[in-house]
Length: 98
Image (cartoon, rainbow, N blue to C red; front, side, top):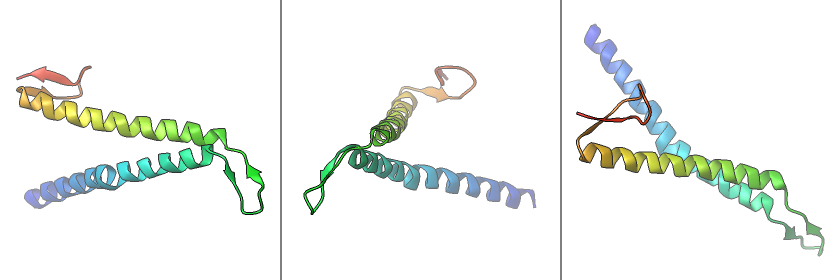
């Protein structure tokens, strides 16, 4: 039964990371695009002008910053492992030599 518990634990971890990175980052990027649209003003069909919402710019900045940091960290992880480094989170930065 221990093997099944370990398998189940690993499967849930893979599912969670897959949802976060596979669906979460694109959804966060889409939220950033929506923030850009909110920050920009537009002209309605009746020639009235809607001003932009500054909260949309803040939302876009935060969303795009998180997405960019995740991408940079992923690339750094790939490069570090290619150079024979181990990745752990017991200190900063999370890379150390084997």
